[in-house]
Amino acid sequence: MSIEISGLSKSFGKKQVLQALNLTIAQGQCYCLLGKNGVGKSTFLNSILDLIKPDAGTIHLFDKNYAQHNLEIKQDLGALCEDNPLIEEFTGLEYLNFVAKLYRLPQQEADRRIKSLTDYFFTETESLQKNIAGYSTGMKKKVGIVAAILHKPRVLLLDEPFTGLDPIAAQLLVKLIRSYSTPNRVVLISSHDLNYVERVATHIGVLNDGQLMYNGSIQEFTMNGESLIDQALFQLLLPHHHANDADIDWMLS
Ligand SMILES: Nc1ncnc2c1ncn2[C@@H]1O[C@H](COP(=O)(O)OP(=O)(O)OP(=O)(O)O)[C@@H](O)[C@H]1O
Image (cartoon, rainbow, N blue to C red):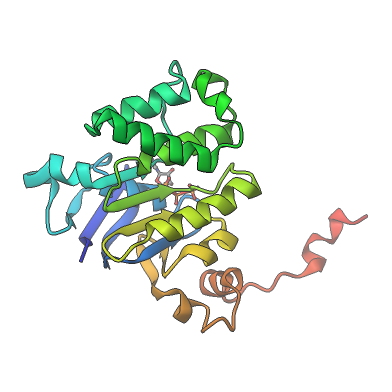
């Protein structure tokens, strides 16, 4: 098993966001975490990244925990965080080279990987010579994704990777994630973009009230394709909600 989480709890003040959450993700899975705004998806991912200290629970990545193997775990992890912090004074290329150096990639290999990934993702690679401060949200996101993959981590965590990408870049990212999801790796994604989730996920988790309300294969979630993924999610989270046009007819006049 590559990710094993047991009894994970986290509160902010009086708000309990995660409540003794258990989850095991096996190698080869592309696990997509869904759930309403504010339900705790980023809190969960940031706990796995050791950016948030949980109140209780244990996290093991490839049988190692942070207390004993902090550096080894972090070398195995690549992540795109929701706020995607970059060094804005750097150009895109300077930033990616800086990240490659952090992971001690040999320069030739770093150059090769940066070139292939930026050629893949950026239609105008000249923009990578400009400071990140002037980039659009989507361009920043692409730099963040390339930086997360550069060192070929065994565990790839992507928080809202599709948000802000144009449809071309999003489609390229779908292909990239599929290629990246080999049997010896695990990809964990938090996303609201169900069209893209449907194309990459092998497994789905639905977070609600601090717990996983659903945890299983995408086939089971969509009843072998009988239900669309957005309908399946709606049914699960709001089974008794019957939208009635009369409720909002004040808008029409
Ligand atoms: N540092 C913090 N301090 C206080 N409250 C926080 C903090 N981080 C998150 N929260 C709260 O924890 C809850 C879960 O937030 P989180 O960002 O994990 O949700 P999310 O599911 O990722 O939401 P979204 O889909 O909107 O991105 C929210 O109520 C949020 O306000």
